[in-house]
Image: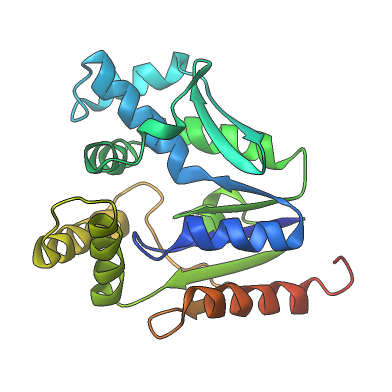
Length: 223
């Protein structure tokens, strides 16, 4: 069974997908973490993320893997566990840029399809239902207003003790939306057969329940 969840930055895809996958008893692959691993590797090796040829060349040799330990995803690059290092804003910005490169996306899509072919899986990202798993059993487009997504991210940063300005977070989020939807290769869009779930006015638990209901309705004979 394959479940695809797509949506813009700050929609809560990773955390909601984690909860949904746990409830269903299947694995969750956070594809964004794989691009973050590429971005972080570029930063650590001094590769200019604006140099598409150099980043693409890196991906020809870099092996990005996913392992699961204690129910959580661990993201590795050439065998090194980068899980605790890929959630900074700098890495996020690098991942957003390198993710626009066709060669990088081709390498990551190939790896994602390889993983999904071996087991029941929920996969989230920005092009899962349209490119990575076009034959997914269930496709969901998870979204919320830009203002609400920015508020959630701003609150998350403050909870971590980071100095955050809401207006700056909102501006960065809108810029990321424009980049994701406007890129030439595999842009963010809602698959024609996806169900849209808008969580602007939903709590976390309500969002999880809404998605579980959709999945169970569409896979009633398999769950």
